[in-house]
Length: 141
Length: 368
Image (cartoon, each protein chain N blue to C red):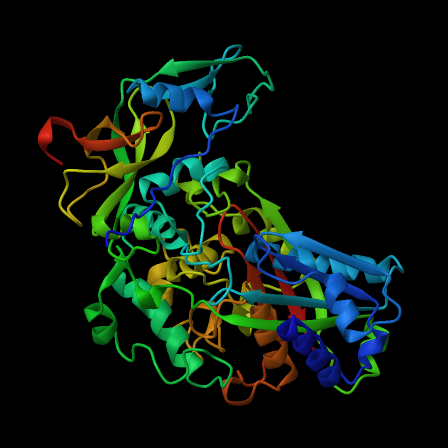
């Protein structure tokens, strides 16, 4: 008997909807203060620099550098058991001063290094939900 | 429930105070993993409750709990306050390891769990990798922290790791990764358990059967980007200043108020949800320079006979994850001279740390 292993789907809210709408269109979006230009992550409802509630979602190039990483060898959740070992990174975007949590694909376990160039791709988990992942830019890491 | 009530009852028996004299309760929980103070009061039949508070979140609140008890007593709102932490992290619904029945994928977690940042140790591992990159911290440095914890736990009958764990660096290095650079030994041990301690006025404490331990100072701080640490501690990965924790913001207040120096600390009960956390604390609190935490630990300075004995009971790594409240108790018992086989001889100034990241606090405790 096949056992259906559930995936973990993101639960978005009004502060984060723009990111997931962008992901659905395979675009990486970040939130920027419409008044002072500060880039906000995590996506709080107001600017932590100038307190403005005016915000825009802007598209990133989807390219960045690995700020740090790890390779996971033990999964505590059933949906990731099939992926072990898999690698994760914090990616520093090339066009906005934020570091975002990332899943890496197309890399050898443990063979990741800080400063490596990566670029975003998207996987359609369901008809409604797409999830970003990152691969080595130019195929090498 | 029975764990919490038993811990509170045993704390009062240990102190030589009638449990019915407890009129204040301070506790905390994480995602409903504990029992309400009102329920504990009901079970123990406390007739005169006047003050209670239940904080949320994890080990970062340890110093705040003690501060709250002190403020309640100083304000005349309670006389005898018990602080407890009770948790079912091994058998309960909410597991620290992230393997509970349902993953929370809202809030900050929507950017983490669905991508595979599925638990606490993956995030701490990423932060350890960055520390290794910036400062040359090595796996042997992490191993020195883990081996110190497991070695000390062998002297502690309460420790879940008594009778097992790595015995040598070679054995440590040969064991598999759970998330690079962590091995199983670098991470705290999930437990079902409870612990409790009593806070009262200095005058009252002097009349009880145990040697009193006095609070010399308490301090806590949040960095300017505290939620980057988030519920699962992932977010200082993406913070503006990811390698400087709360300790660096409050350390001068803490030592200044107590009137002691780093060299005066006889026993340090450091918050060790992971081995790297101890390295951050040693640096943030000024026991060594930034980036020197690994070599400091590996030098033997943190051993029972070193200049700064760390976690003589095995800490959260090897005694068990009671979220830092057990660290306060380890410090208290060493200062009273009642720590048995794990006693640090002649300890008179002790310190506990609550949390290692962008939010946290510490306390300095003394005996006279």
